[in-house]
Amino acid sequence: MRYVFNNTLIGLQELEWHLFSGLFLLGIAYTLQNDAHVRMDIFYDKFSPKKQAWINIIGFVIFIIPISVLIVYNGFDFAYQSYLLNEQSGDPGGLKYRFIIKSVIPISFILVIISGFIFAKNNYLVLKK
Image (tube, rainbow, N blue to C red; front, side, top):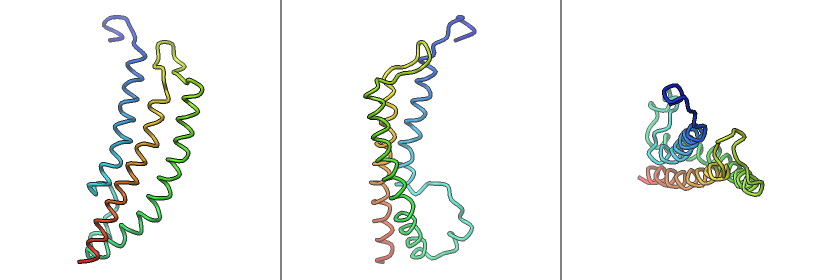
């Protein structure tokens, strides 16, 4: 569009970044719920389903909960400060209301925590078999 019409729409370019960020952030919880995250399966595949379940539960408790809680805690302040300052793009013609995309950060990690509990519950059920 820039070269054809000799016109730039900075707002559209920023919207592309915002949509990609939102898709990526919200996709984290979805892939966790479907056990589709990339991992090193060199040893994991050789373990029994019960050992895999233990590893998943321990990983949830040690990694997912603390990191997600930290991101949610700081993410709300990050978005709230953006709202209070009425933060907007520094580029002329850029998007206003930067707090909207910043609020997706804590929301997505709340969903990660919820998905993580479902994932841990499913692994707990494997242990009960």
